[in-house]
Image (cartoon, rainbow, N blue to C red; front, side, top):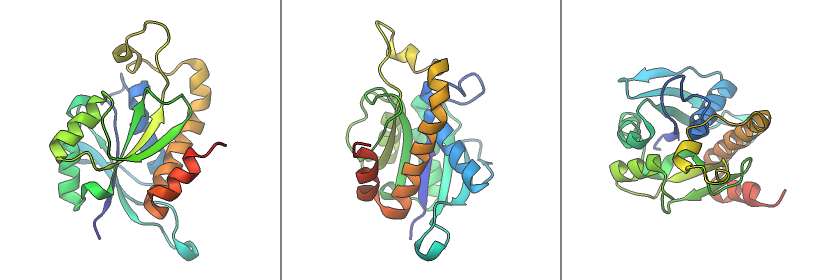
Length: 197
């Protein structure tokens, strides 16, 4: 069985760490924290952690998962993702990409398989290098920018003080969504996260 590979998108370095664009990496950090995993560098292209996510029937540890954060800039994410897949025997069907999404209200999480990239340069790079759009996405809502703010500037800003209070709940939900995809499948996860609460 091929490994699950879960990639959190973002930009490298402390200057970007709190940006809206880095919510994918924040989610992977939350998964590493939950599993008490440890990141290691993979050929300088990505930080990876081997963990087990969730629990299976009877309380057995959940499936083996490679959590990864590309160390490239967002628009060059494809190379590091392809490298992680190659090194860990991953395939696009078991690739989960966690990323920010302007078209989803802040605080919501949506899940899908394949489809377009919606102008997201990280997804575009991954689709181009991996050779398919048919991989799973955990779309973390960051909302549209207010007024005439340029979306490119907006995603590179930190969350507002009001949003930061809610951010732990959003990261929790995104991490739960990843766990549910790898333990129960996309359909079950969509049922939970797309249903009105």
